[in-house]
Length: 227
Length: 87
Image (cartoon, rainbow over all chains, first blue to last red; front, side):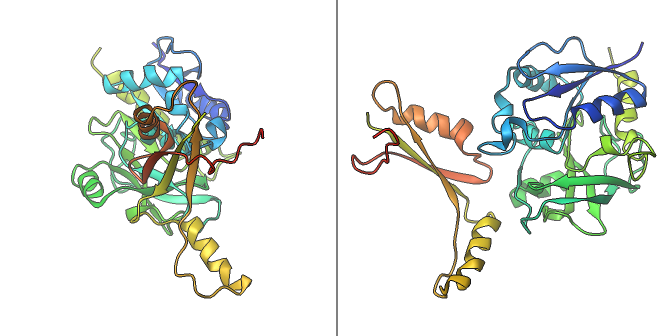
């Protein structure tokens, strides 16, 4: 059976279309989810896409966290539903306390938009099991508020538990502490990543096809997941 | 109706690049005696009934501030403090 992967659209989402396409190219059936609808329509996994939900008012992701669909997603994620938050989606996951820490204004204050090398540090998550630990990938980064911060105890815990999923290599684009580009929750089903794997799934539009691995990973995870 | 004022500031240990950018611009104004600038956010809340500081604190904790990176204070506005756009 084809896996159904939901992609949420918030007011101000930008990359829901690309995320939907990436899901399809990876071989799953994309299901569009709407921020105001608490139903998940039987999806097996969820992607929170990039963009500027609610205009980034107050703080990035702060208002989206309280969208009706998010209440359901938070509960389902705690029950093991695979959730990938990309860029604004990462910010929403932190605001929803599914992931620790916060994303703040890039240290140099500039919006950064470039192809970015990452090192996959953890291939044990639902969204990175198609990679080898230590593998380098090339994926676009585009953010103004992508600087990951957390207190030292949290950072040490993330490192000790192998929950730093990816790190920037060849230059940190936003000042993130310990070059963190992606993290996961203790169970490994929730991943937040600042760069955009959904923009690196086709030779025509991306710098590589490396992004596909995130989406094929979740399919692999779902096949192996207990019913 | 009295308002509740919520002030949200980045925690001291969190880098404030906006504040730094403003501080760095001050010499262009001829100001050379400012050591640092920190930027926060002030939110005014008007309740339909009596102002409720506990309720305001709950709102601040859940939505207005992110306790991971920000601190907040909650207080009643002084009578002459609030600029009322309607007046």
